[in-house]
Length: 178
Image (cartoon, rainbow, N blue to C red; front, side, top):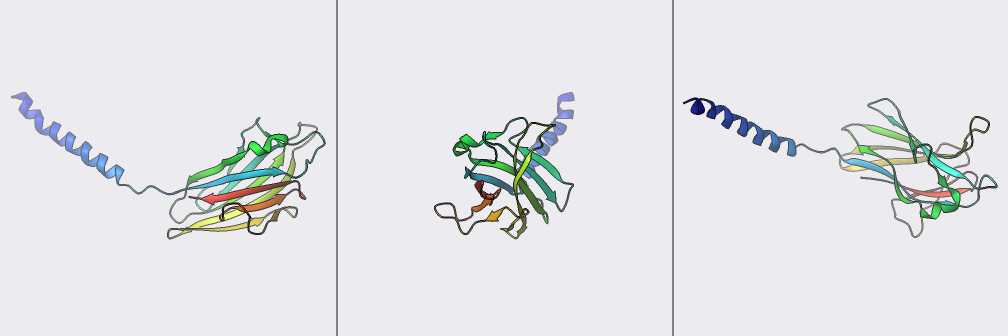
């Protein structure tokens, strides 16, 4: 008798879990935007003994406070002699919210030994982006006088943006995509 009394509660719970699972799976997932370092190439060292490099990435969102990231994370860095091995690295990624505009300041930095010698800024690139329907609208520029956007790259993906940083010290290719 008691079993019949509670069976309708069990059926309701089962139906609830089935429908809630189906409704969660049908939710639209916000598209993830990623900034990738396609390549980085040394043209000349900034320091005689070689350079130890990393990226400062600062994200300015129209919907939230700024976020600061180091790639690779401290205390790791990339040694300039081995940059040929640094390819297709995701520098930044996250889902873009509805109506959100994002600006990324991407700074290549040469690490020095604090506190006597501060890190050297090699150059800074800026990309602003937002979604317009299904299209990702991008605007690339330089934030430092010694960072130059190169003309359309040869032998590289058509969506890659190439920059020469640090008065001709480093060349890098960046791709912003979904």
